[in-house]
Image (cartoon, rainbow, N blue to C red):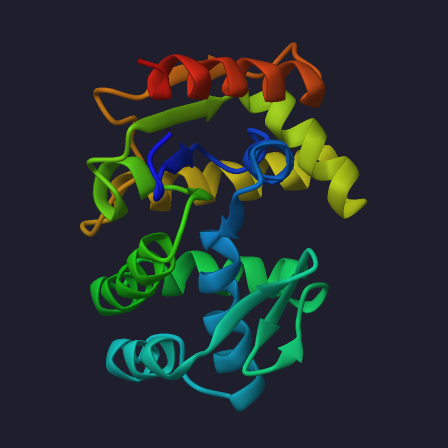
Length: 216
């Protein structure tokens, strides 16, 4: 493998990206980067500060000022552990809106590319293989049925499945229709349907793809 191999894992919410990307990074000895946590952190900061989420310019400024780091499986915003806070439903909802702003995405993209240039990484999100690292050697698009994704997220959040399904549908629409870097499968990405698979099975499937893409 090259020194700075990037494993780009994209897909909608509830498809298993975070669980699998984290496991694959551990197996490969790569840095794991959850780009969604970066957008969530910006949204979290805005909510804390009482900033209007409709103020695109202020959101871009926050995105450029935010210092998001990953440490021992946790997420730090400007040195403060926000791992649990950024998973709160109201932060997730705000992040979905903030992430649609072109200026915010540009700021996050620059930071993601900087991280990727520092060494091998498994980076998961919604536009890694299409926009952030379009030349990545390994690209995977994880997906699952709407029912499977809602069930997983409901268990994770401890929320009613019906409510989670509605929230996911709304998020999917925003992600797929936004003007800047919409969610889509890169033409050269490997598609993996995780609906009926265990996390371990998805992990092995992705590792097989990594081996196939990086071997001579």
